[in-house]
Image: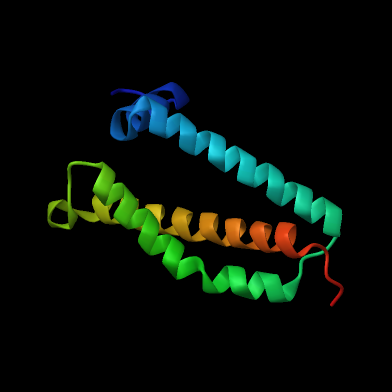
Length: 117
């Protein structure tokens, strides 16, 4: 691998997760992102109460993302070999935390509707 291109990254992720699971995750992420943008445009402001609950969910998202990736791949925590592996693991945790917080905020806004605070 001489160049880091988008096609290369897609191929790596398809190999890691399998083609079906990878594209299913991309589709779910796109739907959640579209719903989040819809909620922000509809409400024209962020609710701090919903934002707090979303923030409190972040550690669970980080742990779930790391465990998901460890479960999907053939490696485990004992296989972490160096700084790059740790950086990737922390990146997965950060993306999981952010993803779950967006999901929680969006779900609250769609279920409860617009609430004046």
